[in-house]
Image (cartoon, rainbow, N blue to C red):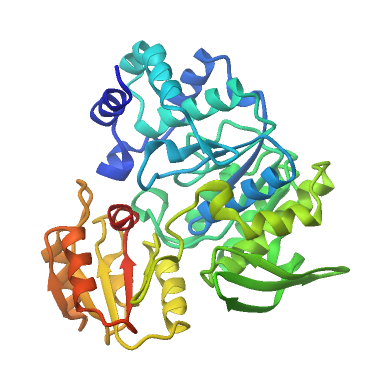
Length: 427
């Protein structure tokens, strides 16, 4: 098979969460264990850092990988979903997995795939572990797909676990309270492995503390370790200073300029300090250079990403209440004349909860991304209208985006979001 035929086979053969939702989620680790067993358990051949959480885990994973790259490590990075190219999910020092490896891996594992009927995600996790092992990476940063306890990535024993935050998302699978979701996320905390928690919260702290006690794991709350004492957006960078007991990172620069990255950077630097403590050779210079060039080093896209300057056009993959809350803070901190919002969503999210957060004084361009999980645009517009949000309906993301571009003046702001898949189609 060619590369395209291989991807077509995977998409057609395997249930894919991003397309069909909860029906693709496998609530046990049997398939990924079986696949990796057949491959000789490649996940045991390199060091790992495991990153979970509701929001920010992708940015956090990319930042950690960028710094490890700058420290001279051959660094794998596994993330999901992809925006434009399947190979974005699996990288080494920023370079995507080769098409040849994808084709050969699927060809070799086809009989097992046919017999196990794994999910798309299970196959890609096994592929990533196999690739990182074959290329002899020093360390791989592994982003959790969904939840933690039963996530396919959770067959690793990492050097460090990181949980960014907890917010209500995937409640039909993970539970409808912060405590229930935290319990699932806490499943990545392993025996004797330290864990960094990105955000403190009364409802979730006790869950993490209890799990860490059970596993005899050191637990570090990032916001107790380091505090953001100053920050400003300056050109293409977010400048900040982190301070803690007997430590200061002054004038850190990040090329990820969303204000929500302040929490993520706080988490990342806390995690890096722990890695240094357990023996990783990472200098302060590596931390500064890695954070300043995350996008170029790792290929990260879709996080408060500017795609045009006049009119200022920003896209962001935030898609739940926690993420949209952060987007609104960024919009409120941006200068513009009129606000245009291109929005589409998937149907298994808290639609009403997200729409209630959106500004009434924007003009909306409602659309739906091209996948089975997409919320019908008429339903989105109807629910939005009931909450006082007004705009027009478009059958595709591209038509909505084109209309926003045609209507916007040079000093306006166009924001594109509501779903990773809306952003993917624009990019």
